[in-house]
Image (cartoon, rainbow, N blue to C red; front, side):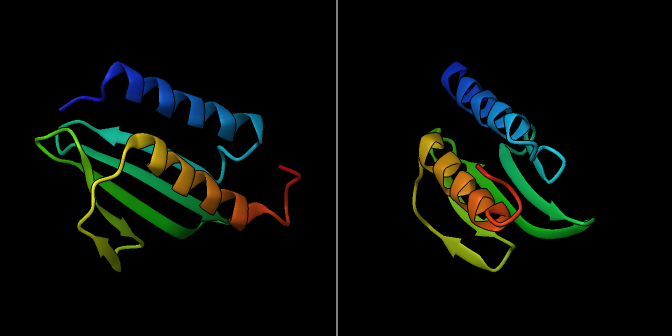
Length: 100
């Protein structure tokens, strides 16, 4: 499965936000089309703080939110909701270090 054009645009906007705020060295975001997984990673000083995996199901919904592999929710999310959750987490994590 691939990302839709709208999803690609949203993800690109998020990645540009990371770059603009000098957070791309602390945050990785990538989509694995073979497994339909959207992965968000947050690093600090070479230590993984958080890894979030979003799985896209056959109905094109994002499900099974797994944060640091210990929380699971059988709920559907839109990519806009996912990016807001991830952005809020990044802001909370790096709030003291950056003036975002």
